[in-house]
Image (cartoon, rainbow, N blue to C red):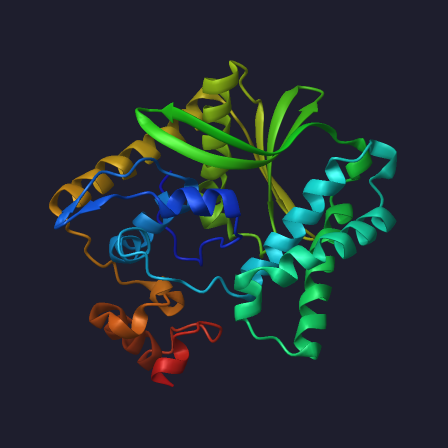
Length: 304
């Protein structure tokens, strides 16, 4: 199992984790200190491209979150509140009320306001968010979920790595505790399922470390699409932790020498820094010329 990806990384925003990740590095003149911790998203980004990692976490260059990321964040918030209700109140009708109640939080958020949506696009945004929320019922009845916690922040040292994450949902099932994470995007292809499951397996490792109770399963709920899960066996969890350790070692070595080399590949098409990265632009141009650049890649506008 590795964290290397050829599909766009999940970009759902968790404000608490985002604030923590923004303080990931300390810079003292020309010296870049070792990171304070790793989160699943920061580990994935380093494996995707060390240069982009440096731009985000060391140089702290702003990256627009994108409309899809904010849609996912809105859906997460609605489901967090819904699962905090007593089981008999976890209905679609109640979810609609919650969506209306929490919408002002999204509407006031600077990232949402930066999208500059007109009235028609704002309505489309709200509709996308509601479809993501409604998609939960296509997969499970939330009234039957035995919730233990939602949006639980976990901080632990696993495999010698300081790890930080936010677990969408912990629940009690017939076979024990289960870690669940919501996704509003499309499910990964079979090739990338293990990479995606690594995130929730790391949550399982962190919860075992902090609570002394090992989750039995780790689940990714792709709202309105499918559920992908794995048994959180010692071997599966150990594999995910080992990959995290490899990333940590590579990252701390990069920080020690301040050598964050670019890693050109398919995801250059989604990098907000592509226009200022010669290696990235060369990759994008080559893929465009060969007809291998996905049509929905934002960077297509740079070479079209």
